[in-house]
Length: 299
Length: 254
Image 1 (cartoon, helix red, strand yellow):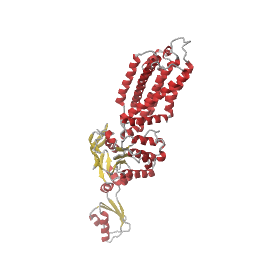
Image 2 (cartoon, one colour):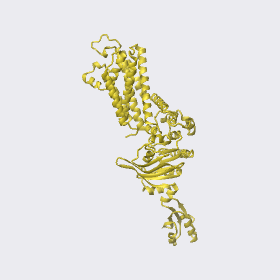
Image 3 (tube, chains in turn brown, green):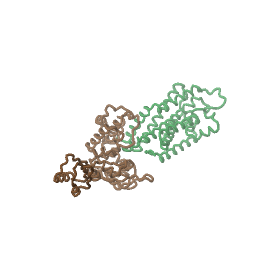
Image 4 (cartoon, rainbow over the protein chains, first blue to last red):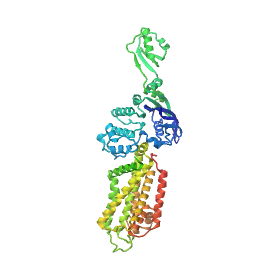
């Protein structure tokens, strides 16, 4: 069952086309990633889905509500971590939780949220006294205190140091484990690869690929690369094997690029021809390879 | 939780935030009191030995107390509200509130509630401290004073929301709000008595809302009877700034 649906979404700001016909579906309970270079329309898409911006064209539905006409009602059922948003500097941690909890009839008891998200010691601290990681935890707690069914996290880990980022990943998985659907906007490939069940690759306001990270990597990452050493000898027959796209040879090093089950096929064929290299190495394409090929290396 | 309870919660948090900011706290509450006490000490409350008519021909302290009640409303409206609104827009506080399902009306209502609360506290400080120190004239027509106080508070709240709507950021709001506040203080009768101002200065004062707010608060307080001109001018400011604020208010930075 799709909880988020966009069909032909378009949005422009003046002359600039920010989103140019985006269609996507997010299923209940998954972590769905939106990745892409800066200015590729990720945030605009998410803000339209949240009903914070009015699209020029396209059909949108989140939790079966139209964000354009029923935005206020929708926003009470979703949780949001927004880019470029903050809290009043001098608001205390407990006051923010208490205030946000008041927005939903069946909100969590915020005292429990303080403990769960490691903010107990900071309950009386002002927002401006919090570290980057503590702010993230507070934002996540605020996004979750109203028991949202869908949580939108926009560039949640930007600006965090690597250790704090790992902690944030744990938080995101925990959000999903508690039953919410997560839409994660990020430009960190490692983060998308590690967390997302499925993702959409954005560039220039369009979606270039959609699927599981491994599927996208396999389909668009430029294939599996096998390298090994081989003494002089005839290797032209490698080109004839199924799933082999390209064979290059350089000073006794051989590189075979192919797709799918290329590794066992090549390995078996080598053994059959009496070639048994002890340095056969495999490089699987990563999401980053796919991303760079899809977006033409911009970022 | 009901909408009213939410508004109350947000207004209470806003009031606490105000108290935690020493700069606006001093500016809104302490500064008018200090000015008022300096003026009261210098000019006293006697109408004897005057060569010409000043202070509407009443004692300076009796004149200044209602004037400074109006000035407190101006301080809250012209400085505190625009700075808060612009900084919330700039920092993305509005974004976060909106994205969490807080309605625009909840925010506006909470803003008006906290404005009324702050102006009320400032008014009580002015009235009680001067009454204790000088035993100056108490309001003749209490209901009239209360009604006009509500109008004056609403006028400056609407002006403040308009400034918060059109100014781009908190620095601009702080700068322009403070300038407007001091210009009005000097030209509208909260500093030099209006009778000693030269023609052009007086003309300038006459187009500013504080002049009319002071006059219209003094009238029922001191038993001068009703005047329709200041009432009409303030009604115009209230309607005009409310309409413009509704037209130009934005939750997002430009």
